[in-house]
Image (tube, rainbow, N blue to C red; front, top):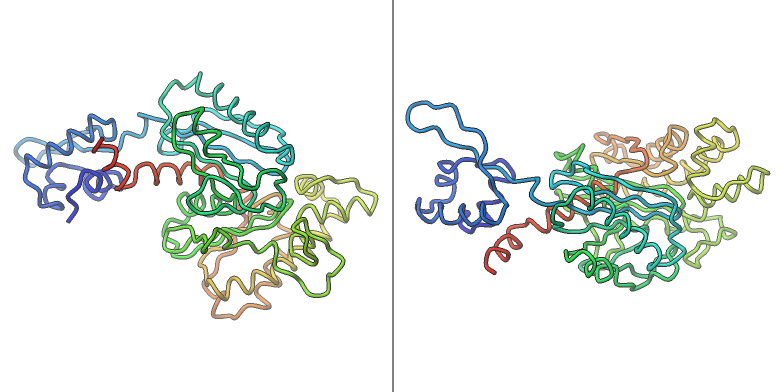
Length: 378
């Protein structure tokens, strides 16, 4: 039975029990103990009382609810050539937003300082306390540490303490996560909460996948799960990857590879977002290359689908458009076992919502049972 204040809070937050009577029934606590714990949760700003139930005789009960507006989350999404940041309430509603060109290759300090400046400007508008900061990065992140590990497309970032850099400035916990993982978490929470197994593959300048199983991000032993961009394709020894290997999927079918190929064809293109611009404009060479790249990605995803057996596969990122996804579907369904794909939905996820995933990660971590109990014990 739920007995701690944190466990009671979770019952209210999830909507499982939202009145004192329902909480008494679920917890088995005495009325005085329950009242004392709820009083502490309300004093901490975590719960508030809302509307009354319709009375069936006797005093009508008031509903308790999570106070989603007593603090804010700072969320940032860093990509290879641009970044965006937002301030949201605890339900993920955006209160302010900034974005612009930022080159991850310029290194951690200038990029993080620019994002911190965006946060400062937005907080001047919002004026609420910060409960946590979530940061999405285009590289592998070691679980439990606020820093990236050996990132192929983030020169100068290896081991840099992102959490300490931003945490000191905003006096709040900082959670750092791989962008594909946060896209997967955001998709699961916003669009597919009932999916037992979901995969998001992000195809932009690089390629990576985020996996959610049983409602939790699967990261692997050291954060390398889903790093499909470095699966090597046969017959492509000429494709040198930024990781130093030859024939990696990202070096063959990523947005950077397609941009280089278009440039060789006399169509100057600098990044995955430039490829997307050409696809939107209907450029025939871009369309042709996107379909080929989609089939190459589908070849690798066929194995992933057979291993993970997801119910939903979302293609996100700069190349998440119909021509590319048509190629993915063609090769995926041709190569994977029919049993692995018979209940599979392949969806286009646009450029992905890493910001939404970052907010979900912060809220679910900062307001977990253990963290709420720890806060109230101070």
